[in-house]
Each structure stands twice: as structure tokens, then as C-alpha cells.
Length: 291
Length: 322
Image (tube, rainbow over all chains, first blue to last red):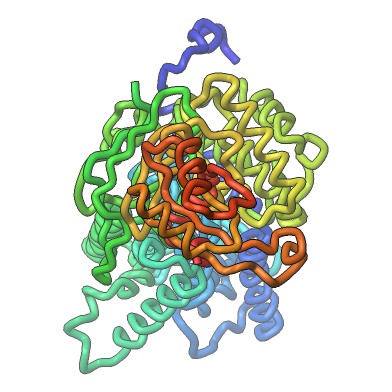
């Protein structure tokens, strides 16, 4: 502790930033040290490894990558870095949304279910403040899960496949550091997508005291959105769906980078996050806590 | 200063049910206020509104003279509470649970947290179970942990909703002793219960709820005064005695046949006549009875017990009068 801290009188002065940081840290500890959530993170970590090993076994000759899969899969044989993109796009279909749905759906509904919500509010944690802390923890957990996928995939890719200058989807070859920088942006983009999903989960979580119900509702929404997005007749609705832009991170793997697609994706995430956070706030600050 | 005051506080649930109906609470500073009423009479809903958990349909409420729910973040850290039973995270230990609530308090000092948590646990006798997971706590321990959460900081007011609910007699005694201690420190205690006997010994004031309305509020002596003293005459001829009592102008004169059941039958085989004493002097009533030729076997003036008054107010349970 610095000298400046000591000089602060130990009165009842409210230091909003410091006290909120303390609350946030406690919330993160609660979320990250919970056995169920640790298990979820472990599962997310195992998947890239399994995918990497499976792909390595399927193409024993690194030069013979001639499968008919997604574009990424063809690139993998030449460069292990591509395992990260494969892992992210595979896990984005179900695993990452589940991880975020569990933590987001549980956030408020779980507290209501335990009855701890009424005590947090009587502390008083402050309704808006509590909601902000909850959303912060959801976003952090989504970010952690996404980075775990990228990190494990990167290590596994480097161990199982050759690593060197990265040949992008557009055929251009960039240096390895450039490739890794692009990987960082891809990971952040996916984390942003998960943050938007987290806002939806938070909003649903404020409407019930049954965490399982909230989690299931978020998952149903994700799957429904993905299904609708794949029906050609409903293509007009596509851009407005919450899941539509999730996989658009491949725009970062081209030269030049397709910024307009990326920005539209980020705009979609921002709108969803803002909309559902507002909804959660309106609901949570006006509803009776009866649990 | 009033620790709690409400005026016309009302809560109508979405289904239309009137849970709390225009109640005007006045809890004096430093009092131990028993908030009484049968289950479902609106006590918990009132407490939820006081703590800003539920929003009133109409009326105002104030804690420590700060309006609620608007002033929740300014005043609630001066108020400890136990609402509708304890609630903690089952996978955390007792002390971790308290640390969690303490961390949520924006006015609590992180540096003193550990010491305050230990002191609170010590106060409720849970220090030895501090490192035990909450899910392994007994019911009494859970209740005490909830009270410890209310004692994490020096409080000016403690609101305890049914603190002895589900406890065995010993646990009840422990909680009562704890409440006495808290009150002795100068903290105002607002304690709800559906049993008068549970709080009678510790309360200075009571409020009695019945189907959402506050039917009595005042000090215990004031509650006692609401009970009218009755004169009871044991005699072989209750009808005649009742007639004499009525003739003297006493209200509600009635005769009761001899009780023939139970152990009392032999010792107390005489029938009774009774009436509200009112302003009459008991000596004179007795003399008049004898003068009228009534064989008076026993004569007594009795005031109803607090329990009788409480039951009369809440209309709950068996009809003791019949």
C-alpha cells in the first residue's frame, strides 16, 4: 500500500471507484472460483486440443491438405496458427455461447434463487451498481473463455503443425507477428460478440429467479437465431439476428481487411448490448424483489 | 427521532390483493419494537418495502428519517436486516459469505473487513464454524449467520423478520439474548413475529397487523390497558349471579356452566358468572352479590393476558372466549 493510501482518513467517506473495484473483484472471484464455471472453462480449453489432434490424425501429411472443408481447414495444414480460427469458429456454434449463457443466465436469477439478491440490495449494493458489476463479470468471463480457446489452440497448433509466415484466406502471405496480431483482433471480435450475448442473458436473468430457465432461454435464442440465419428465404432478417455477424471475423484474415463487414458486426454487437442492458436496467430497477 | 416511520404505506399485488393497507408505523428511536401478526398479515411485505426491495403502491416510508426507497443507498448501510430467513451461497464458507456481503457495501472499509467479520461471527458464536461451508450449517447456525451479516457494521437500526422461525427452544433463547444485547448497545430493534410470547419479554413497543392493517400500535403497557378487567364469580347459581351483575350495570354479563372435564373438574366444580368490571368497585360488586343472596364461592378480578389481547386483535387461532 502506498503512502497516499495511508494518509486517507479511515472514515465513512465513500470512494465509489475503489469500493466498486472491491465489489467487482469479489464478484469475479465468485464467478471464476465456482466449480461449475471452472468446469466450463476446462471444457472450452479441451475442445481446441481435441480438434487439433483430430485434424492432425486426419491429415498425417502436412502438405496434403486437400479436404473439402471450410477455408480455414485448408490453411491449417500449412500453418498451425489456423487452428485458432478453426477452434473459434467451431466453438462459436455452441460451446462458447453455452459458457456465456450459463454465467449470464445465472447472474441475477441465481442470486434471486438463493435469496442472496434481497440481502445484496439491503446491504445496499445499489441496483444499478449491482447490475453493472454483474455485466462486467459476464463480459470478463466471456473474454476469458474466448482467450482460453485462442491460447490453447495456438499452443496446440504450434505443437501439431508447422508454424511460420501466415497465408491468409485471400492468398496473401503475412509475417507471423502480423498473423498473431490478426489473431488478437479476431479473439477480441469474438469476445465482443459474446459480450453482446451476455447482455441478452443478463436481461433474461432479471426476469426470473430460476437460473436454469434463464440459461435455457438464452440457448434457445442462440439456436433459433442460427437456424433462422441459415434459412435462405429469411435472408432479409439475417443482418438483424444476434448471431449473424459472429463468424464475420474472417474479414480480418484477408488483405485488405474488409472493415465495413467488421464494423457492421461490431455495430450489431453494440446495439444488442446497449438494448438489452437498458432493458435489464429498466426491469431490474423497477421490479419488486420477491425472492 | 423515529427510527422507522410510514404514512399510508400500501402495497397491492399485481393480482389485486391488498397485502398492506395504509399503515402508519412509528418506531421510536432506541425501542425494541415487536411487529406482530399471523402469517400472511403483511409483515414481510411491509419489511420489504421498508428496505426498498418492494415498491409501495401508495404512501411513504422512511428509515432513520431518510425516505425509502429513494434514499436506499444513503441509509441502508446504517441498517442491518434479516428478511424472510437467511440466504447465503451454499458453496461458500460462513466467513466468505459475510465477506461477499461486506464487499458489496460501498461504505465498508476493505482494510477492516477481516476484523469486522470475525467480530460479527464471534458475537453470534459462529467463530469456530467460520471455515465451514454454509451448506453444512444447521438451521440455527444459518439463522445466526444471517444475524451476523446484520452486525458487520455498527448499526443504528436492526430489522429482524421472524428471527426465531424454525429454531428449537434453545435457539430461540439464544436469538432472544442476542436481541437483548443488540438493544442494550443502543440499537433500535424492529423484530417481527407471529408469536407474541416470543418477543413479549424483550419488546418495549408493539405493532399488531391483521390482514394488512395495523390494528394496534403502542407500548406494552398501552396494549395491556386496552384489555378490560373482568370480574368473575364462582357460584352454584351462575344465572342469578349474572343477572345481579347486569343489574349493577356491568357490561357483557354472562354465565358459564360448571366445567366437568379434565383435572379441574373436582377442584373447581362451580359454575361462573362474569362481566366487564368497568368503573365499578369490586368490593361493592361482591357486597351486592351477597346481599342478593348469591352463594359466592370465589370472587376474582382478572385482566386478560397479553396473549389474549393479541389473539383478540388478530382474530387468529381458537376462540378463547367460547
